[in-house]
Length: 328
Image (cartoon, rainbow, N blue to C red; front, side, top):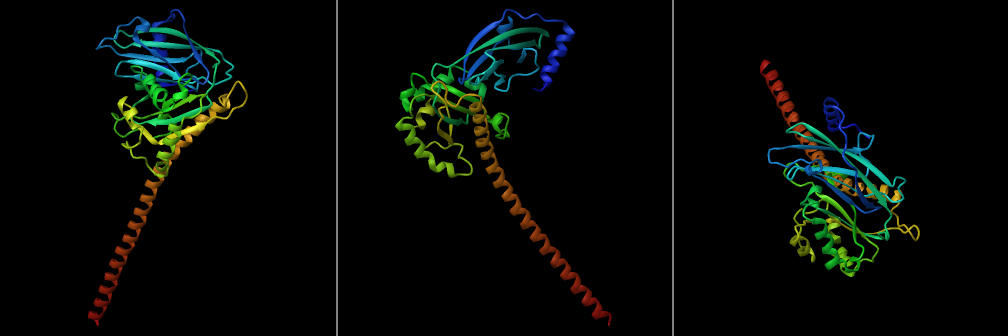
C-alpha cells in the first residue's frame, strides 16, 4: 500500500482541525467474482452539491492509508461524485471489509468521516463463460451513470446471449489505462473501459458467429478506432457504446469443482495478468511498429550523413590536388 499525496493532505487537515467522529456505519452486501460499485455523494456527509462548491473524497481501508488491490476509486468531475468499485475475489479470508471515507468540503474546509462496511457473500452460481471486450468511448465513471451497466447487460440478455438472462453479471471492470494502455494525448478524450461479462450458460450461436466474423481483426497491428461494420454493431451504437472489436473474446473458464469455477484467488490474479498482457501487447505492438519506423529513419539519416561527408571529403581532396598542381 502506498501513502498517497491526497491521503497525506487530508490527514494533515484532520490533524489541524482535530479528531473527526464518523457517523453511523453504512453496510453493503457484495458477492464474490461480481463487480460492485458504490457512489460517494456529498449528501453522504449532509453537504449540498452546489455549483460553487468543491469536494475531495479520500477512501481507504480502515487503519491503512490505501485501498485493497481489487478496490478502485474514481472521481467524476462532472457530477462531483466519487465511485468505489471492484470485484471481490472468491474464497476471500476477509468476509467483512471496513472502509473510511474522508470528505473535505473545499468551500468551508469542513472535514467529515463516513465508515462503509462491505459484507462479502458467496455467489449462488458462478460464471463458467466470459465475454471480454473494450469500450472505446467511455471512462470508468461513465459506466456508473444512468444505469449504463444495465443497458449493456440487456444487449446480451435480449439479443446476443439469451440463455444468460437468469445469471449474467459483470465479473470485471477497469479503466484501460490501469492495464497498461497509454493515456490519450487529449485530456478530453476517453481512456476506454475493459469489461468482462460472465454467466454459467453456454455461449450462444450468435456469439460464436460474431467471434468468427471479427477474427480477421485479430491480425491487425492497431484496431480501427471507428470500425462499425459488425452485424451486431447496431445494438451497441443505439445504447451509446463504441466497442473495440479487436479486443472482443469468448473465454471458457476452467471448472475446479462443483461449487467454484476458476475464480478463486488464482483466477483473480490470472485474469488481471491475462488482461494486462492483452493490453500491454496491444501497446507493445504499436510501440514496436513505432520503434521500427524510428530505426529505419535513423539508418536512413546515417547513410545520408555518410554520403554527405563523402562528398565533402571528395571535394576537399580534389581542391588539394588542384592547388598542388597550381603550385608547381
